[in-house]
Length: 311
Image 1 (spheres, rainbow, N blue to C red):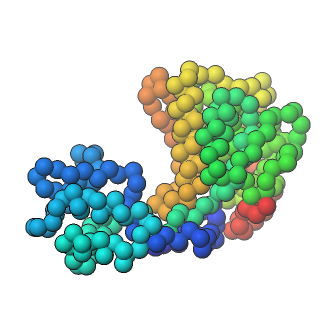
Image 2: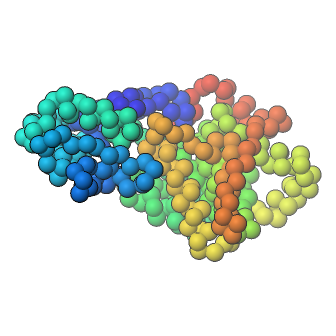
């Protein structure tokens, strides 16, 4: 991970690291607290199974080592860190050994700020999940736009580089979804079914199965499914507040993988739905393969071509 250029499936191997994203020096995972034990060791994290204990060299004050670790914020160069280390009695070899130990424990962030695979998100829907996702993405991390179902077909004015979130509708308009596939716009479906949340699948047109593939797969198991789907068209699901929040959080976790382009993770919803039921406390993964009768790959272009990610 250290210093690596991220190449992820959604970007199809394109290097998207901006020159301005280069960090000055090593960066400790900001989620991990730095603690000093009375025994003289420094502890990183407080999970009893994952916390890392650092033995402080003789003659060096543990609080000083903790303060030095807090300087590992990506904004200080190695030379600056070495200078501060010498001031508290550590050698260059001590620092290199420390950084190696932190890297081995996966506590150092990549040497560059994570490049963004997704820089724009369009939320399409009307309901509590749409509002929750849009509200959480309104912090400026991505360009955020919204639209609501309007009963027509095709794709409304959407940034062609955006990932589209189809939220709340139990069954979205088939014409709208077909337009996304033809425009080669990635899209993630999120909705509520009988009080439980469903996140996925994440569709990368031309590279994964699509929502019609899922419909055809379900129809092969239940021949009357198209008649049921027609009755659910445009309807919004209902659930208790906890289930709505949990479903929204699960969807945001998937979006965060794409926005941050995390090198150690791939989206869990590729060809897959995550079904969250807080009544039974179960999370079920269900796969949806490409269906031979769908033809979505022909509509979206040849497999292997990069998806349309540019405005």
